[in-house]
Image 1: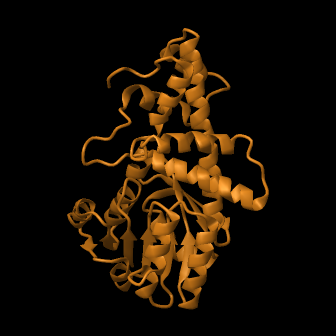
Image 2: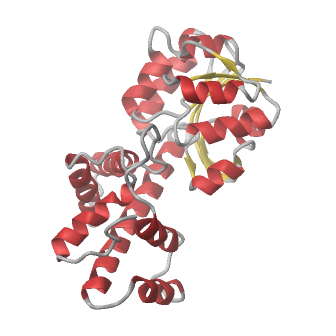
Image 3: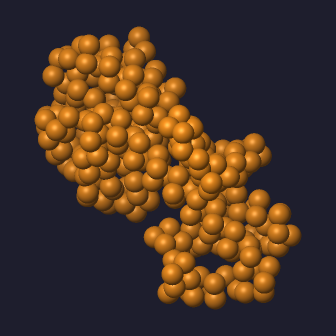
Length: 303
């Protein structure tokens, strides 16, 4: 089976590496030469455009940063659908709006291509180990054909329903995660202002009802990992990504007429961080906002 992978960023690159290591004949494309060269050392072939990837592949996957990027890569003059053949499969791994998935899917059906929206969830360790959760929306038959590829980086593959449902579940999941992030930072600021050490707060909450799967890792990152990436490196969990995802969830809720008592304020906090120019930093850079509002230093002065 010939596989193509477009988008070798902080999320896409480790997935593509796992696809290559699984033994698939792989063609890759990215705007940056560095990650492409890294994949070619693993046996992948470099392509100059998404269309070129598609002409060499039976299944094409894309991991992209925005609705706009997904539309251009899929539907542009040098996009994937310009190079596919009937019976090919296009897998949209990006966290984008369900409406964009439907738009791409409609265009793909016109040329006989099946589309699966299959965003993923998991941290750095899961990306590298190939143990991500995959939320796959689409028809059953193409999903089963694509399953061996998805299993190269996904430990659990959930068939969420028809086209667009994978994107919907992912937005809801990331909204919940974003709210959890904000609540954790608020708790840290309140604890510090009340004279508690971070270690005390962390150990008690980890053993209590306030704990979550995100809590301990986020506290560790806040206290030990500089949110500013090293020169030439990308953030592993960039503020621009979670900020975009939560905002898309807010827009989905508005379209469905669902009030978000917690989701909307969380989106505003992330937007505040983006407005300060922190888009390319790790998302826990916004801990500074809570420190400023509370007049308390929680993080170390220097990392």
